[in-house]
Image: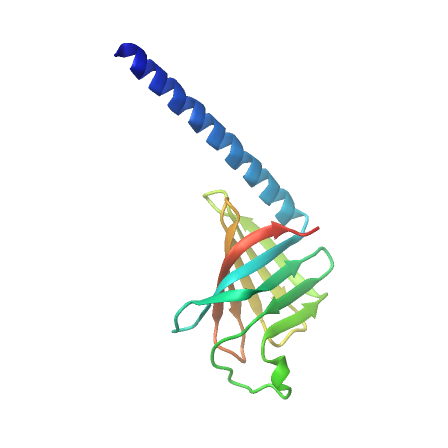
Length: 157
């Protein structure tokens, strides 16, 4: 009976060590990706203000590169100013002038605040990233209601 307890304790310690090593690799990869400004947020769900969550079937992304910000995201919600071109209704834009501030969180994740300087569709983008790579994006605009997205982070190639 004592041998069984020793074996179980040994296995638990081994599995715990393997798990922490895996998480350390994820954290290092995530930190390198964020510090190099070379990452992509892949949206899986959209959550308009005051409405239900909408699963996204198409690949919608927010890509941050060292020299550009590329948003290819849908918009669901109320717009206070109608677009002139109906095809211009989403949150689809490219910006080369933007502020990027990444702050680490207590649990090993990051909060990234992006402020495009010349873009009217989005005044501020707040990206909350967990240590495991899951993320939520909140898009704030003067001309539209706030919309949130949930998804995952991936490294830009």
